[in-house]
Image (cartoon, rainbow, N blue to C red):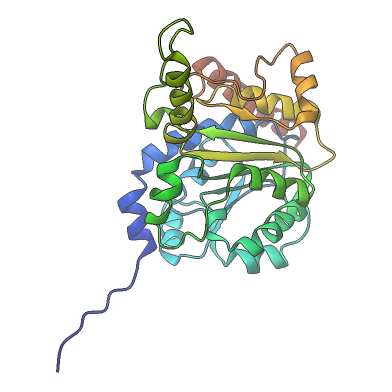
Length: 308
């Protein structure tokens, strides 16, 4: 008789091994904080983080006085969150979304989540998010970007629980089908894959061929490894959507904007971005924006104390 060892796959161990330490993840997610301030009013309904994992995003929200709750199907993650006094529940996302009441949340987030959902259920997932959001509420979904050939052909499959990559164009379509207004796609973390390549002057020998090669490498090999969907539930606050685009302009990558917003963006003096513009690398939003954001949060808290 032979002795056999049976090992159970631990997703928490997998996350700890591959994803990075807690502070790195918090730094990476902090770029989304300016977006949260775009959803009024003062005492807004809570933020829901689906697949909250170790609670890095929940902790950031708590540090910025934002009411939030997370759900995750892995008990180890929930225990990890509760040890840090973060509001988190062990729940299957399909069960949770099916029974939760309408319009309970102002913002719903899911970081590296939708790629774990079977393709035939992804539209239902976005439909459910739409139902649970308050009017004018926002969804943020981040996922690996298969436009990057290393991600699409290799790195995506390191996680054995991933189902199938979700191309940005499909994500944009699903959001529209679910009823979201003017979805934004932001390509993220491009700075992690290398410095941008420079084009040759047109009068140099072989410049056309070289520049074509640079374009191919830049759009596929050096493409951003992640992207995020940012969309609002109608009635869509156009100003909030434009502010979201401006806030994301402080990230490190480019945007794909729906055709019907291009005119509004060009007419609005606060915006300098158009579809496909390359944004220089920044690891976080500027300090001036950070101070403005915290001033806004403080004023909201003080206003709430006066009315309570």
